[in-house]
Length: 439
Image (cartoon, rainbow, N blue to C red):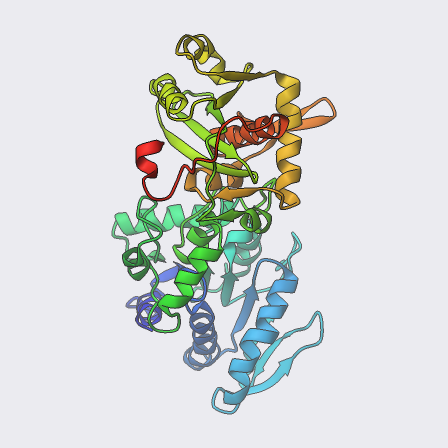
């Protein structure tokens, strides 16, 4: 594919003295874009071309997220592509024994795996080091193993290939920062950096966005596959996998696979219970509705807080009898007097209520007993949420979370409020035809 050709053409450029222009080549693309093909091409070129040029067998080391992942990718993904071309590529042996997996060429070049221990690579020399799926690394372990092993090899190269990761992807995030800096500075040596990704503010549902950032779309991936992925995956996971946009965290309190089971684009809440929450910085606020089902829906989420009382008053008028849940110890507490003056019917939760509400919300989601209308802000809140211990229980940690969790806190309070009281108003969908005139 053109993107693969571009990476190879630039990444394998040589200086006038014949050494690689780029000591490290980094490329980051969406999932299923053809990284394995580029890696294999690079491996074969190193094993054959550089051995012929230098007159010395080349040592190649492949690594992935873990040693087990590396073995699986090598044996199950790469071997089947190489074996039919064994004679063409001058390969003498494929080794599958655990602990000694690899490829040996007739000319003595070898491909092996880098173990995942901290002292991996010590005492070895490496001519080509491959770091696949670097997003999984929370430290610089692979660089610490490979870079010293290449120190005496002036023609050596590192190849880094990955989809974007999370806030915890320490190694990859550093490479992305270095690479973008090199591109901005128009550097022609050192690091060659390639990135295919969408801008964070682009519409993730727009096929035009997909065409701009997915180099394999229309070639090895069909539009229908991406449309299906958008419908099935949580928005954050879709962005990381197919738009190649870094997300906040992969280790969520509520796993993405669980969250996905209770989310859908067509669920509709009723105007029975609302909850209001602000973030600690008071830079944004959220309104979440909960009705029979139970069904949760983010009614409003936007910057600032000056609009909160007016919005609550407006919803109160449109849904007579609706109740509004607030945390009396949370940031929204300062609005309680104004909300009362505006004749908004409040349900005031103390700390113990919030603790019960959090446990109840978690259980309802895990047990698939609630339905939630998908909303980008709520997805982001769940992806970045952290726990805060309260006695023998826990609540959502406003200060420790990696995202604005006000939509999640509001959803938690709304669900608990609805579960404790009988509905007081008739069924009035918040979404669907004419919804904009009601909510």
